[in-house]
Image (cartoon, helix red, strand yellow):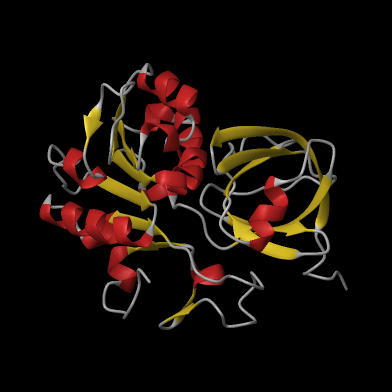
Length: 270
């Protein structure tokens, strides 16, 4: 019987510095890891432990996998001190991804904050592969400052795509910034929800809370707001119970939920 906790070796092919504390690791797993946008994997720092991350690359890319990681604790600090050609571990994918079939024929609004754009990047790349199925894709992305924006070159590229709209904002600008200044909620005023519009949100918990409330004010239904949640998903397969949210295991039943599914549960954004 195969051990579900045994990671696959994944040599680091490249490391891209996105911001002072966020790096994208380009991995080439020894065994292909096929995933859907929104699912997560467990990344192992050998000898130190593991942590859950959502791939940020396209599911259509079969040989390589990218994971964007913010340095916030022991495991992520170890990972940030690695170099190309070193080998880490990866297991998964786990959980449920974004239900693309529910997005077909609808305008897709994507709202990201900080490193929360990582799982949304995977979704965006998936949508671009099937762009003819969506009337319009609208990205709203915010970060603390210009230097905290991830995927800077990609943001410019995406904004030039047909039927794709990109609006960015920062909480605090600098001498180089000529764009919008303000919280990400301040660039949502022109959105109008209806039966043919869905919204996908990922970012820090407090950002997700206020973006969700703003989307409801903009007439988005709770069934059409999709949230990518972060919890302590230790085992990844619904055994340890660390990620329980009401009746759900985030690792097994999520990490993607509609707001309608979880809105009556306590502390959903904690």
